[in-house]
Image (cartoon, rainbow, N blue to C red; front, side, top):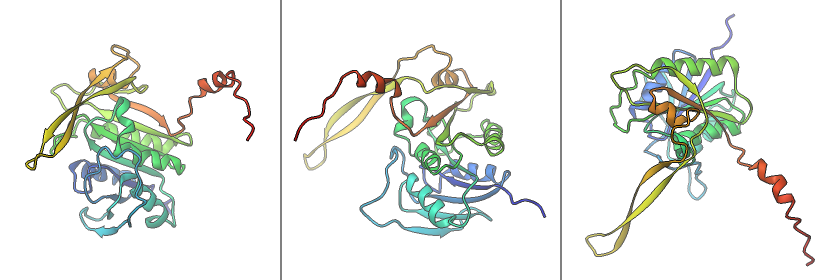
Length: 263
């Protein structure tokens, strides 16, 4: 008897009808048995939000041929939770993949990313996970140059696993006339978004705000970062963890000698 194929749970934040998730589903079918649980509408920029104040709805869909799939009313993190604890309650996935996102999730954008929240949620559950993103917001973005790398990275994770609590944040540059140079294992760029808020008036004279801004790279020119890799036509792979403890600060704060306060 042959061993069972790897079980791969697929999700995203652009919604179950996006071209990115359709591409990812097709690729993962080459590696194992695929189940999809994805939002029924776009959830970009949701970060690691979960739904607690209203019911979650889950509906089976035949949007993908020969693939068991469900659309969920919740966030990407909700989708992974429902996928593991309800849809796949009898068997834990061997891998969770999220994406392919239409747009970059490099540097600080990982904190806002719904794509990566699905991968991080899987890591919290002890499941190897990868978030895939392409630096192209177009609905009809060209993923062809990224496909062999997605397969290579996913296969490597299936074969080697990941440390508990770790997920991979994988970003690809936009398709160009030049082929990708390869893969760079790198760190998250130290950068931030400097926001600007434009105050406007609606037709009723009520004020509202429109957020804009620009990305500032504090690691400009540093060749070990994801932003450098993308700018130089590499696929950027950053191992991420959900433990946000600033360990280097723990011992420093112990020197503050905070004393017990009598009540």
